[in-house]
Image 1 (spheres, rainbow, N blue to C red):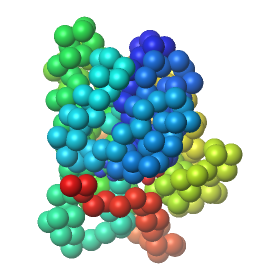
Image 2 (cartoon, helix red, strand yellow):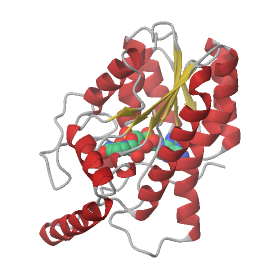
Image 3 (cartoon, protein in one colour):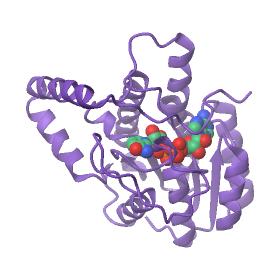
Image 4 (cartoon, rainbow, N blue to C red):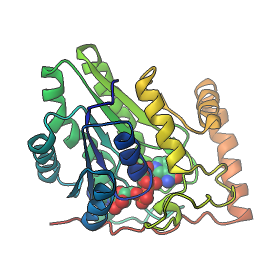
Length: 282
Ligand SMILES: NC(=O)c1ccc[n+]([C@@H]2O[C@H](COP(=O)([O-])OP(=O)(O)OC[C@H]3O[C@@H](n4cnc5c(N)ncnc54)[C@H](O)[C@@H]3O)[C@@H](O)[C@H]2O)c1
């Protein structure tokens, strides 16, 4: 993928991985970078820093995704790269009690947003001979771990939808990559919105190695400009665990159950509260 002169949309671009991606695309010479986020003020701040366009958008609403694509096209021209990155986690470890509204909301944001984005950009990408969808998913889609149930189910669904897109449109020029990291030091892990990028990630905890979003973004751009792989796993051990799971699914369930019990006994896994509201924007 040639990123110089590309028109790129990044959702969840006000913070964390999305912000690092937006900054990296701009630094690579993208013609237009649209920073979309539920937090419109921070989307505009990030966009102003990189010479892009900030847009307030709730990705859980298909009409707002269509409007986002329309404004991107009107400002910069047809979209070459759509990074469907926005997402949040329900509190881990969670239980069986989530309300219907909780489950509907996380499904709208973490899963269906990928569908609305594809509906909004893929037809025009195919007409122009190709385009790129970068789906920020999670290692939780490959190797279920201590994540909460809503997060787990939506990330698994997002991976399945990305496979479906790659299988059905890959031959017509659509490229699809799924970014599946483990722990990354972002708002999800309490990183302040106004971080200038110089702060170190917290020491590795029960979730293992914690990467900086800037390093993850650099890996993503290298992959997009290189082999364009379907799966991007910045933490090496994720791919290894995924391989072992595929080789022996039942053994993996037994081993992981025991590992989670040990982790919970040592230190309860608490996902820091997300820095964002998860209420829909109406
Ligand atoms: N941080 C990690 O360890 C980690 C690991 C695996 C996957 N991920 C995934 O990475 C993606 C980015 O998360 P992050 O870690 O950078 O967290 P973050 O909280 O720093 O950034 C998420 C951004 O998404 C925005 N957002 C949330 N709901 C939205 C909505 N409905 N519409 C538009 N924007 C919305 C937030 O305002 C925020 O700016 C998420 O999909 C997350 O699931 C994160």
